[in-house]
Amino acid sequence: METWRIGLNLVAKWSAHAIVQHIEDTKKNVINQARRLSIAPMMDWTDRHCRYLHRQLTGRALLFTEMVTSAALVHGDVERLLGYDDSEHPVAVQLGGSDPRELAAAVAICDRFGYDEINLNVGCPSDRVQSGKFGACLMAEPDLVARCLAAMREATDTPVTVKCRIGIDDQDSEADLDRFVDTILPTGIAALYVHARKAWLKGLSPKENRDIPPLDYGRVHRLKQRLGDVPVFLNGGIKSLAEAVTHLDRLDGVMLGRAAYHEPMILAEVDRAIFGDPAAPATLADIEAAMTAYAEQQRGRGVRLNQITRHMLGLANGLPGARRFRQILSVEACRPGAGPEVIAAAFAAIDRMAARVA
Image 1 (cartoon, rainbow, N blue to C red):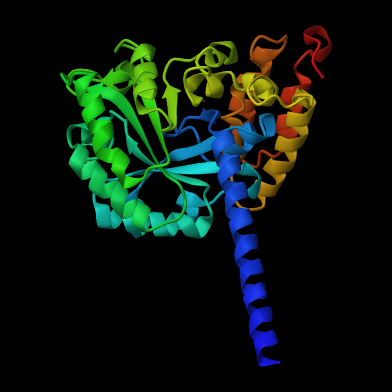
Image 2 (image 1 turned 135 degrees about the vertical axis):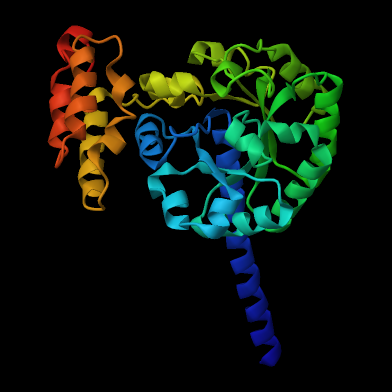
């Protein structure tokens, strides 16, 4: 009888382990597929309200938070910095920092919020980031980055990834990028996102660093060819889904940045064009209903309407009534007490029949 009980307990434990493993495998498959098209982390833009809007447009793409510094998480208001709506999954959090112990502590905090991926920023060129010794300036210190990543990996079972540039300042984008990547890969990172421009930390502003250094997609293609099975994803200057698709036969995925933010309706085609989903894309009517309900929910939490509508200004680009749409969302939404009725008024200004959209 005792042997029977022991056997039953072993079966129960095995079954519980199998269930947990199945859940983990499912999550891993979802995140791996989602990386085929991701929305870049953008400071002051990809906050929780922006991500909620983007999720109404695509159910499959991977969304990223703004960069959050490890120091802010360890010492600040974690709910304000990391809170999000469950519908945003799959969603990755991007961290900035250069202290391995502090980053490990920040990763542990992120894990409590259930993010699907944790990304280290080694690509942002802003002065604010450089003064804190994180972002693109870390490309000059691959050994330090490796120590940071090792500490992060030790602190979590969640996939840890890196986003970098092809180089900084006078670095050679061939030899130095290979050296950087070869130094960090042994830490066991799950993926590498590469912005296909150098960052010139001396002489160019952050805005200029987004446009002036020339794009070199071929360098990222060559990196992927050299690394083989290591997942490599391209970021930088991609303006359309058609352009994104041209890279998918040589890379594991593509990351959209400003194009997704300023022309958000292109995301409505992502699930079909990138993931082969046959479902009909979201319409303006779908977006209006979702964002009106969301604004009402958030108003009950003290969120001002313009914090939400500022991300919606590009939804009507190219449509009759787009100018009035933007005007209502940018002006009326800032008035004291403005509520979801402002969103309804903005969408009413669009001539949907003339635009032949629902």
